[in-house]
Image 1 (cartoon, rainbow, N blue to C red):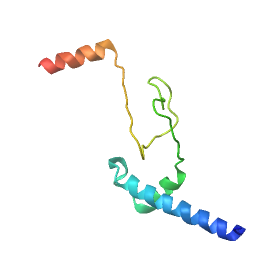
Image 2: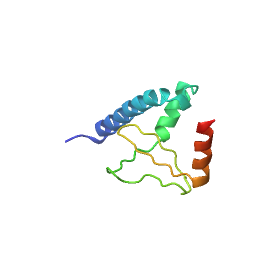
Image 3: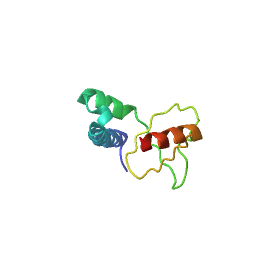
Length: 96
């Protein structure tokens, strides 16, 4: 049986390793390139892991967003609906 102190240290070490890996991952994202290591570590510690089933919606267009997402692992398909007016304007610009 594990004693309480050993378990606590093991959890801290595991969490520290995960934060280090996440900080390294975040440093490769263009948005976070100019952020120093200390701020990246702080950001990594503040993130919460979320998992989603295949085919599920994370956010739908038009909804008010109150979260920031970083895809760490997996694939994402995003579909953006545009109004007919915007699409027509884009098509007209393509012909000039």
